Structures are given as structure tokens and as C-alpha cells.
Image (cartoon, rainbow, N blue to C red; front, top):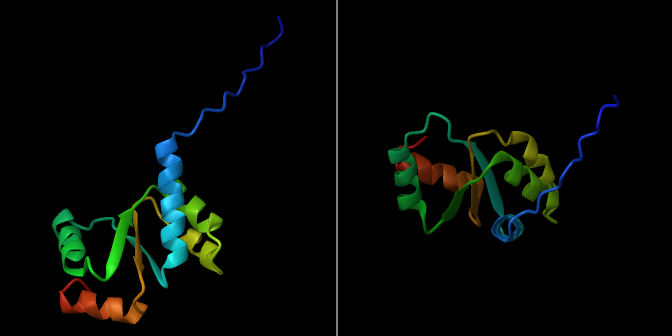
Amino acid sequence: MAKEKKKIVKREVSPEKIKALKELIKDIEKSNTIIISSIENLPSKQMQKIRHMLRKQITMLIVKKKAAVKALNEAKKENVSQLAQYVEKNSAIIFSNLDPFEIAGLLIKINIL
């Protein structure tokens, strides 16, 4: 009896996931500042406070690790692919056109840092 080889079936990626990935790549390419932040042990109340207080200055997305790494590697922006090594399983990606130090200052002002 010969062992049968299992056929690897490649599943189609849903159009919604492709669209979300393209949007993520677009956000990466248009932003001046990209921050990868761990959200592990961050209470949801604090996350809501950050989003509410800074919604005009930043865009914060919680994405799956694989999607974030793929988007960072596919973006056509210089040196962005190097950020992929900092993406963890519980990460947020923050996009902004502000200087990173200005964002840190805003977080300090609202008692987050």
C-alpha cells in the first residue's frame, strides 16, 4: 500500500481582506509617522481614551500580526519594512503626520505615558 500524498488546497482570500490590506498599505505610505505599539495589558478604557483624545491627530488600527507584517513589507515607503520585526501578536499601528515626539507629548499630557 502506497501512502497517498495530501493535496494542498490553496484557499481564496476574501475580497474584504484584500481591500483591508490595500487600505493598510495606503495608510502606511501616506503617513509621516508610523508607531508600532504593544497593547498587551492595556485596558480597553485607556485605549478608548487615547482614541477619543487624539482622534484628530492620529489614526490607530489594531490589526493581526500577519496582516501588519505583510502590509509593512509591501509598502513602497523607504525603510518601513524594517518595522515588521517590532510587530507582536497584540499590536496597534498608529499613523500620523505629526512628529513622534509631539505624539509622545500629547500622550503625556493626557496621562497615558
